[in-house]
Length: 436
Image 1 (cartoon, rainbow, N blue to C red):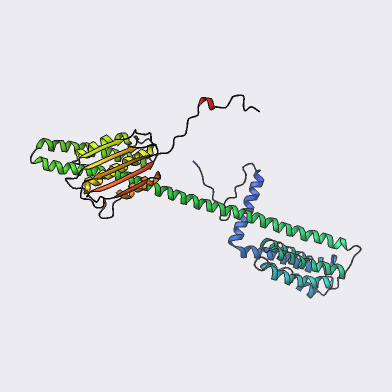
Image 2: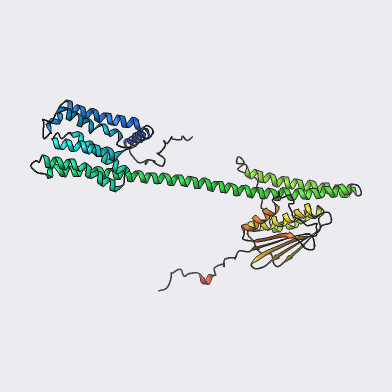
């Protein structure tokens, strides 16, 4: 028994290695839940995030902690309070409008540096820099880095200390690391998105291939059922008509016709059951039988003759060994042509079957002396279409149409695939390998 693990939206394709430690997997699951929650309810997360830093900035102002690092501890407290809010409240829009928010916070940070308050809340600008690196082009990221650096440079020039590099270099490193972190997260996110998109496209292609395969299989099954049922029903119809006529004058012939009807119908039922057994998923051990081949033409023609259609067969050339699928296609074309003659040729029709074998192709010509016309006068049959489909499978050609002298003609030509030459013993390489 297997259980399916629910994968939250947006996390498809992220399967953590089974070799990771339990703590690592737990942390990844927690982070994944946080990301999913943030994606579904971004306002809630933004409010929590902003509220935390607003409270921290107000505490720093109220407790007077800012004075311990300020270059000028005499900055008016209302100004300090306003700057604390100006550097923390805009974080609420850091993801939706990162550049406008950063410009506003830069202006507040410039005032902070000029008056010498040096509020630590100015470090919150690094969150804006991270969001710009995560969502904006590199040119915009360069501009954002300059906006973050500007207040630091102004504060260094306005209130210099012993060494200017001790003020600027750590700030530059912090800005570079935050920018690189944003770029890394963005690259990872884009890579994951590309993998998810590729997986989604592969699923679509897989479904399309499955649909195409199912459609092709349905077509093949429909073609087989048409050939099996259509031919046998035509033979049964001919036998029934002949038996009804013979019953009035020759009862023995009528009995023979009825016996032939029983034999033909049982054979058709057996083939139909075998085909349906193969289609049944719950029947893995369905009874299988070899597909009809050209060696079965004699029994096919005997059945047609017993239905009342005189058939003359002629074979030219030496029968070649054909692939089983090709033999089945030739057999079905002959079967369909004779079935059409039975259905549409009339009571006085006769048929000729000519099979010619050549070195490069097998040719079949089936003609009849019936009334002619199309095999499917109502346009709803699949006989001619099925013959063309079978022929196209092996790059063959099929011509079907009425004859000028009356009747119908079906001409089939299928190329025989070349047989690969068998290697001769003298041409096999030496076991010692090639000579230098």
